[in-house]
Length: 237
Image (cartoon, rainbow, N blue to C red):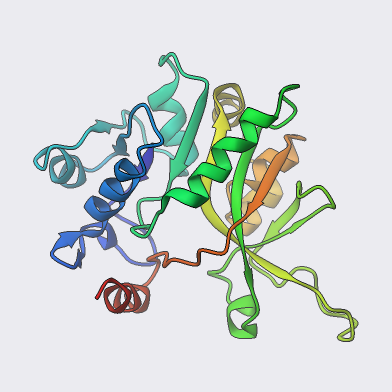
């Protein structure tokens, strides 16, 4: 499932911007389909423009019936009555989505015989301090088994002792959920930490869900700003 809003707060209309002759959302949809990992791929949107963009080019799209606070809510509405076990959420602004990272996410559930993991997500090592400080970059810290402890727009952990060699990780907005966990998220109210940081996966932690983080070395480009789009165009070339 690829949740896709037209009116993104930081960069409205970004999913319809041109990237190498096709819109960003079409690039993301095609990249996801081309992984050949999924039984089905849908764009889930509240925008007729985005719906038409996908379906007019042979893709599959679903219209959201309700206004939603976040992509997970939008997906939960779409899958509530579908007969599925694992749902993968690929962000609409991730046109460089590739097979190796998604395959690692899916493997998490194949190995989880006791069904202890509610969802899995990706993280990538970052070392540039400007990126670490940037509030548009969501950071994640994990325990020794790579379960998420917390997500933040602030640098975490804070380098109080600069002699400690800390690895910083950026959270990439790609998730794989057990359907039950996703529907729980949809039904549970937002609490203060999520509301403060504006990071939806914090809701899972606040309700004691277990998030397995999977490290990938694929940076890609998430298109949050016009500057990101320019970087994406250069990378596409």
